[in-house]
Amino acid sequence: MGHDPETAEQLRSLVAKGVFGCGVLMTDDCRRTHEELSRRGVVFLQEPADRPYGIEAVFRDDSGNWFSLTQPRWMAAADASQPAAGATA
Image 1: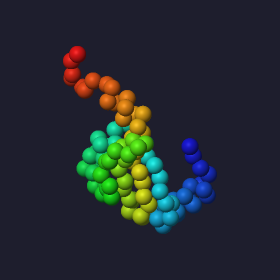
Image 2: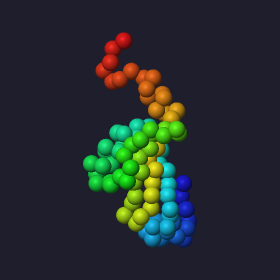
Image 3: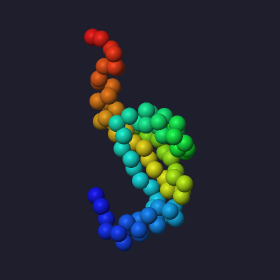
């Protein structure tokens, strides 16, 4: 989903100023993505935790914008119903 150049620049400016606010990034495995991003230097404000809506971890970017890394409950339930890799029945 692209934006015209003027809108794109306005969005970049808001993010850089830290006034973008917050965003939600959906993942199919919050704990795995948290580990991967942590290894890459992302500093999390909140470790992955179970919430009524799923599993969530929170981080802030270099400009102060907050992001929720969220694995929705329905994805967590689907993962739990699948056998572990290499498991036999």
